[in-house]
Length: 285
Image (cartoon, rainbow, N blue to C red; front, side):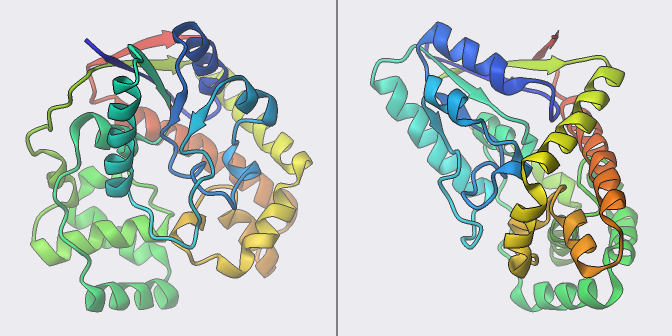
């Protein structure tokens, strides 16, 4: 039976190096399941594997789409499953996937539910509210309608809050309820390995990673993207905090501290997302 081996875990835990070692063992490429590393304009802030790492193993879904396109988890499901079938047909027995985007991983493993298409009128109204009121009142409304989704959604990300709220208002159903349909069948076996570290170690790795990103030029990268700050792809930890700095609302040192804090919060949400998946074999590294 063909097998897809998925290496998952919170940000900064060490998935890249671990997955490269596995890929070399199985003579497999690495299929990335990171919803931000897929964008070619975002490099430092998304911790894209460096040139040496990329040279060791062929990677897919790394910087091959643009922030200006409308890339979704649904498109990822279609493209990724088609790629997996192609690679298996070429003779691979085991393929290695690695990343931390729980929604993308679920899309490949289980298939996405049929979310309703966006209502453009409602979307425009919600976007206008976001601009005039900010994200907090909308987040409060979503908490009242669908507290379950609020446990795993980045509630500081206006685009994510809007999409969940939009579905709730359009359908009268919780956004989280769309994740309970029967699973799609895949032609390959799936095994998930979750990587963990002690919390204090992980948080120190996160803090240091942010410092290294700043040393590598994250501020300059964010500045080059500032004019497109409202695009969904840029509603991302590491960029939106620097955009606030560029706006003059916070000093640079505070922006860096908030990036570290928000990244730690993101790691916690990732673990909450996977906490419901009993098929994951957890491994402390």
